[in-house]
Image (cartoon, rainbow, N blue to C red; front, top):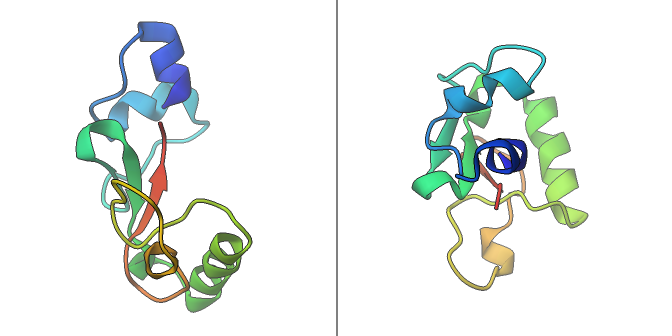
Length: 92
């Protein structure tokens, strides 16, 4: 998303606008651009439990992965910790 912004001076409004910056097509059934481009949501219910657990470990180490759109201060209840809830990754 940052690369789209750098090239066009506008934040992306659709997940497909990231395609030219990624080495493979983004599956729009698994990823969506949320809240006016602030977050990319990943549908973790589409991956194995091992991947979900690994994402939870990343989030607990400080990587910004949340279970919902966060529009203020992040609390511990916002941090993804595994399971099939969607994972929100901030992009701006």
